[in-house]
Image (cartoon, rainbow, N blue to C red):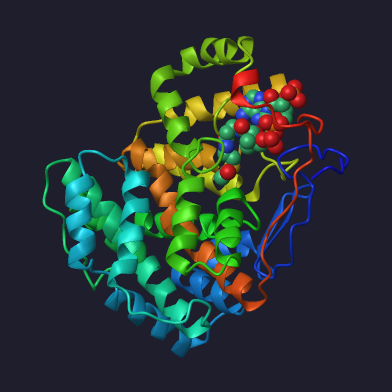
Length: 377
Ligand code: ACO
């Protein structure tokens, strides 16, 4: 480590860290594609289960393949006893993202041993994880509220069943479709922080559960997936459209970051944010509660005018989920219940052509020096 190399800008900005055929984003154009398909086309025409297949196999499924994945996910929705027991133990002590991380760790105890990098075994594990995330998140939430978790229902879609297990009510079909589209939008995003963490872990030949646990821990932070919860907390603190500007003034005066704005890669509006803005606006009308949408739209305009910074995917997802009656503390777990699709896809890709990920540091420490015995210090 004695060789000093040019210090990068920090945060690996602009560094190409490997090859991938899963998610493509062009930050200058504001374009996102999964395996070549535009995110807007997938949002309009696809659904979460089909998107999962696409990300894992890099092609859209035919009818039989889609039906097989749908049936496999249905069969894996229930929680093993060990995971349920862990959730009961941590319910009052761990926040939703921490409980999800703990539950995924516990899931490995219930899995059959298998070759770490075997694609078939990992597709099976991927199905287990994707199917059980909604059940884990909903069970933890109900336990925290002192309620009994609800059994998953096999007559409901992936999205519909999650909303049912959370609230005890079968969602309106339009809301179910909207939520499913939210899952499509969040499923994949290239070498983002949590996906990269999963790939770093997988590249050591640790197993899929270890990689997904790393990813959940990374998604939690407010500079990444944790921002959607922080956005809603901010809107609730503001409370009214009239308070938006003075609240923003206070954040900017102390040089603070406004949650839900800015992105490392996008230099223009994130295409997912446009779709989520429309959802928030539509729900504001349906629920006859314009406040959260109007506050969001005002903040968006003010930030653009003052700082030239656009919203990111977390901004309008916050008010969208709030209109759906979901507590803000859960928003980052909703991100995870979608992003599990992308994480698994990237771990499969990493195992398929693996090399240890091990960068170097630029040395900024002390010059070489002799050891000084304790008595001479
Ligand atoms: N509010 C105010 N100013 C901002 C914001 C923001 N949200 N985002 C960036 N800026 C400013 C910075 O202060 C900095 O200004 P300066 O050059 O005058 O110091 C400049 O824009 C560049 O910001 P960086 O933080 O250096 O950009 P970076 O690429 O490292 O960070 C990040 C990207 C972390 C997303 C940042 O924009 C941020 O903190 N946003 C708020 C948190 C958030 O919404 N995170 C979710 C991101 S999307 C996702 O992960 C799913």
